Every structure is written in structure tokens, then in C-alpha cells.
Image (cartoon, rainbow, N blue to C red; front, side, top):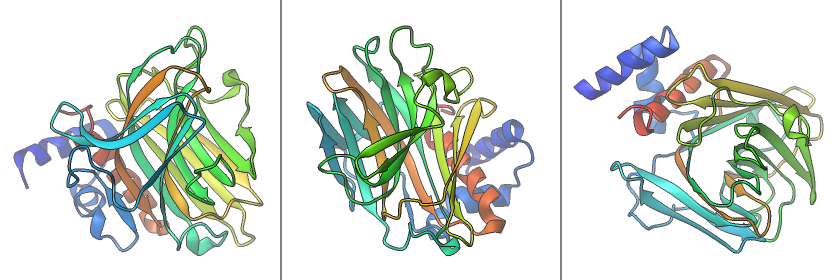
Length: 290
């Protein structure tokens, strides 16, 4: 084990409590070979300026939306979206996930970092995770969930850091827990310059009801975390998972980085381990520890 890795483990132990080194190694270093991990991507092996194999980018009502692997300026490669107005998606299909069955419980996590915003005083800028999507969403949101984080909001920005879950049943969007921003959970001490781990755990009961737990955690300050839980008796059943960005049509331009995407099918005994591994990945690759 390298000295750098040892220092990271020591610091994560200090910040997060009792985190055995073996758990971190299984959750982070070897996560790509885990039997419960159908997909992991840290974007390091992809050429700068290139696309991500298997992913299909799309844009809806946007003046422009581009997705590409870039160097974030620290030698770390990330998947960057530059969006001007409208919505942007970049999704990959996982045919074995999505049906309302206990065996198809899932977890998806990624690290989000807001790079820059223009015109933020007039529009909401959000970035997050799309899951159980019925398609690549090339013609308009339909039949999916997104769990996203408000990077900047209307007027004063007092609602920056709000988190929500949006469900499209057909083309109708329902915002949960509420469309009113002040009723949406807010991540403590939110700051656009920080990196945030976004995680959605989806589990099904024997009747097919989906319970989705959406958690956002500051990668550099794990105590700044917030969760929201939603249950759906008639859940979406699509097989596309990926990234989502959004702002009002005609808005300014948002640049946001995504890093360390992990999609898993957790076993009950390994849920805690996978969460610790995802947080370690966020800190190892992210900006919180350099």
C-alpha cells in the first residue's frame, strides 16, 4: 500500500469514525471486481476530450449541451457537462436493473462539483443522478426519476444546496418532497466550490414498492450531509441510469463535473461497506484531499 493511500485511510477513519482498512480496500480499490458492482467509472482511462463508452448524451430544450472527459486542472479526469438553457442527460443502460423486484435493489452514486455558473441570479441550476429511466431521454423527460442538487437558485441564492427527487410519470413532473424550495431538504454549509457525493439507494419490498433514499454529503466535510426518503407503490421500471443537469430554458451557462460513478446491486450485509467505499472514492479522487 502506498504512503498516499495510507494517509487517506487514516484521515477518513478520523473523519468518519470506525472504518476498517479492509472495508475501504474492498469498497474503493477493488470495487470494480465486486460481484455486486455492475459498473464503476473514474474516467481516468479515457482520452481527454473523449466520450464515455456506453453512454448516450442528449439535450432537451437546451441552446447547447456538451459532455466530455476533461482534466479538472489537478491531473484528475472528470466527465464535464457544459449546459446553456434546458436540460442535459448522459445515460447508460443496465438491463438487469429497474424492475420492481427485491432482487433488483440498486445503488447509484457519483461526485458532483460545480465549476462555474453565469446568470445564476435568475435561474435554478441543478445537477444530479437520473435513474430507472425509460430511455436516453432524447426527446423530453418521460418515465424516469432524477435526484439532484440545486447549485444556485433564484435571486439571493438562499436555496442553493436544496435537494429534491423529481419523478416523471409520462411527461408530467412531480417534485418531492415539494415544489416549494423552502420545503426541500438543504445540505448544511453548502458551497458551490465544494465537491458533493450524491447517492441513491433503491430497495423493493415483496409488493414491489420502491423506497429510494437520496443522500448528499460534502466530500471534504462528511458531517455536512442530508438525506431524503421517498416510497413509490408504482415505481418507474426503466433500465437507464446516469447523469442529469438542468436550468430554465433561455438561462445562462452551467459547467459541472461528475466523477467516480458507481452502480451497485447491494447485498443487505454490504450496504454500509459500499457507502463507505463510495465516500472514500469521493475523497481520494475529489478535491477535498489533495
